[in-house]
Image 1 (cartoon, rainbow, N blue to C red):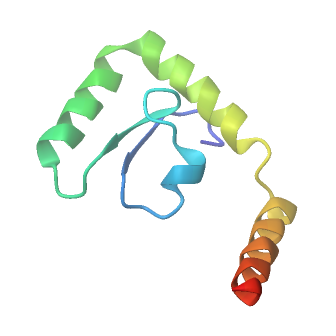
Image 2 (image 1 turned 90 degrees about the horizontal axis):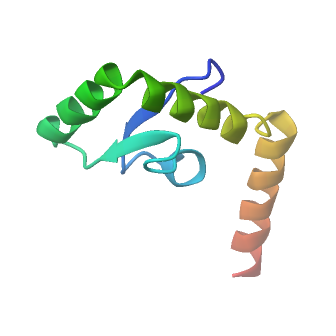
Length: 84
């Protein structure tokens, strides 16, 4: 994402919900669905405009992610767990 590239990822990856918006900055597939993975790869290889746009979107999504952002998320998660 930092390199300005689209993401192809399994829906089951933990950070996917925060970082990858299907059709916006990448493409998602169900774990083990090799056909869907192959289709996504073919789609991005064949479509330079889509690849470039998704890459720009990836860079914008990841731009705000840094150590402070991660630390804040961890603190919020711990606070949530403590409250429960």
